[in-house]
Image (cartoon, rainbow, N blue to C red; front, side):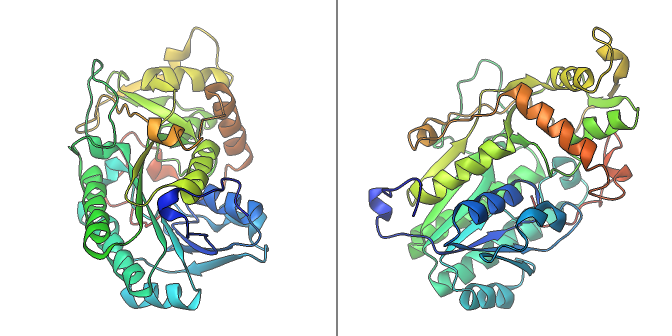
Length: 358
């Protein structure tokens, strides 16, 4: 059934049938849901989402009537609901994307990040233990490694975690909980840590969709600091394919970095988008407003993804193609998220986010 058989030896008896994706109406997870629903009609895919500000069920319109897809409106922080859904839907696999993710917001309402990212993960792990889940893919972030300097080697999965902001700290805490359930209860845990992801369905609080939406409104982009901070950007469809291969070939107990080759300084991202949006070449800086830097804005996150490469994954979408697809999508879906003015300010207002989506 799988495009990636045979399975890894330590998971030879594992064949997914009923998969629950948490946060499946959000950004990355919605693409994973669509890929799995379309490609594997014999799998039942249950999308559990709280539907807060970043989530949008319209992201899944093209598969909403598929017989192997089901949406459940629910909060991962509810133990009774989680156990009930896992039992009644006979879930054997969890892909846990649900989290609050926007770093800026974590400085203003960090208790919400602790509640959703740590407590929510704990609740889900306990329910998964009770029902005997066969595979639990916990989605983390490269930010748990902390800041890296330009001359540092790429971070491997064994690197000591040194998160520098409340969001990253809650993701690291959630990882430690997941690892504890692996070691104490033998739960089949796999962890991923990914680079920055961009593409369709992303709420416009993040850099690329924010800049696109500012430019669509004829506004200058608001660039933090000098724009020298670097991020490695991956197109969301490539990331969905990475999770597909981790689902089938990821080995229990392993951590997999998901990283690409498109490291860009934020100032260069801004210039590329300004040009792509039709503004005059050579005058890109006329459409940039430099604003006060974000608190503890890490310089870069550089990760080594050789372990994932060994499973057969490679990114397929170039920076130029991915950026063009992203701009086209936002132009066609300008009203997808409703009123986004609060997200388009230079520093989003504390307390804006209260979601459990990605």
